[in-house]
Structures are given as C-alpha cells and as structure tokens.
Length: 59
Image (cartoon, rainbow, N blue to C red; front, top):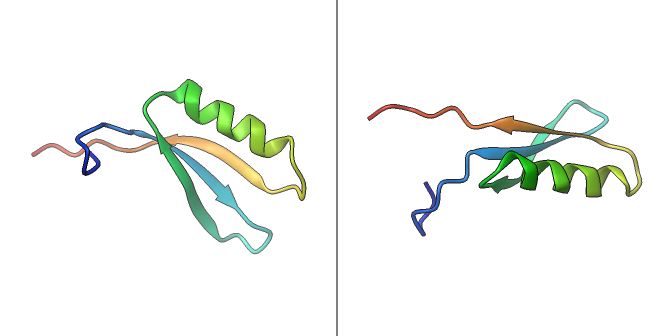
C-alpha cells in the first residue's frame, strides 16, 4: 500500500546496458503498467522494460 492507501501491485522495471535494474513506476492494473512499457519501448534509446507483479506479504 502507498500512503494514500491505494494498492499498486504492478511494477514497471527497466534494465540498463550494465544490467542495473530500476523501478520506473507502480500501477493498479497490469494493463496500465503494460501501456507504460509500450510507450517507453516506442522511444529511444533502446532499454529493456517489463512488467512484474509485486509479491503480497501476509500480515
């Protein structure tokens, strides 16, 4: 959860040429995250972007 209480389980991850990975953003739906990946893929320079689901932890 974020400070606002919204659940954002979908992550967009970027990997650079050196193998370093960075979280680009968090999204409520997989579709929103995929749209961001598609938009970033359409721009240059080429980097590797993908969607991952954040693992839920039980309390």
